[in-house]
Image (cartoon, rainbow, N blue to C red; front, side, top):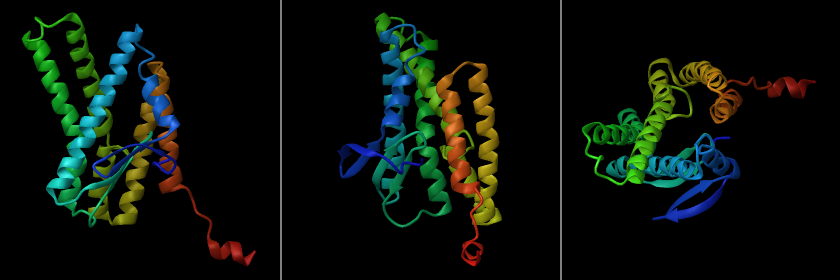
Length: 225
């Protein structure tokens, strides 16, 4: 629910990192499809490292603009609370795209090392770890660039639409586009028999509807009854 319910797991340089039970279970469940406990641990670890790099780049760009981060909430639809004044259009876009761009860079470097044969001399476990990390980084890239709220791509889409259509119309259109894409994600999750993908698509889709599209009763109409 956009990080409304969470608890702190660590504090880094004054920045509160928070999550909830659902977020922890989702992270652990990503390793269930692996063929062994070791592979499952590599999957969970790779997603954790990739997420850490993702957040670090958001943070670095914020610092570059003289801002900071007060709170990071790692839930199904995570949120970052930045310090300082609201960003301008260009600053907001750069800050938002920094995270998935790091995931894309990580995947590119990993696959380049594997394709070049540079990792052939490594221990088999290290090769497997690199391959797993590369795949997980690619998945994080694809998900976070998806133009659906609250993923980074969706936040960029919302910013662009709001700039040209106005805040209200832009947010509404971005929310409808998000619901369509999340519906496609749910169908893909069902087809591939990926319960986590299906669960995330449905719950995040509901979050979008509840936050941006659900009709709100007219207070005046309620009072007049």
